Image (cartoon, rainbow over all chains, first blue to last red):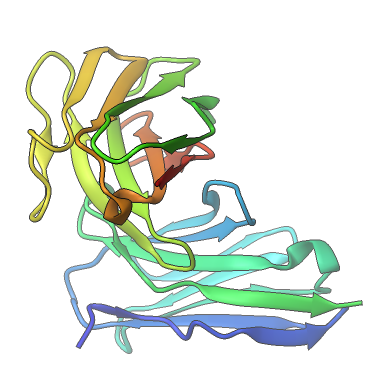
Length: 110
Length: 114
């Protein structure tokens, strides 16, 4: 079993929909949780960075961490075609040794 | 966040040759890392580049194959030595700017070995 599980998709939704992306993990020692967005032929771009549990909001993006369930989520409101990309979750005990999900390919249809 | 520049952005190389990839940051950073990403796959950490000392390699990666330098707080190089087609991949540099700060990535070097 992988330490971090993430559905690779692809996930296809219509423009304007709310998108929910999720990762589950097995190591209860993880404290730092990140979501990265990666466009084709580009490096991963940090979207959200959360320490421990709780919610964090930034514009149309909301990150949730539920440590009791070992589950993290990224919500995208009012999704746009420009949100089409691969979304990678990452987590660690420190912020250095990251454990990565497989990445979910998201397609927003106009 | 820091601006991270990687050179070259892509290259096509012959089997048995070596290529050095550069990572330049526009401000001093505390840590620098090198990753490999196969097309359509997630990221695999190769090593942590330590300033003024030998890099710290992850399991499955060795210094003879992937020598790394980090002469100062803004620059690092990764060399892929004696390349084979299995080394065809995207190589990414990431940096951390301070304690409890997240990693930020460059756009990577796309390497193809013929």
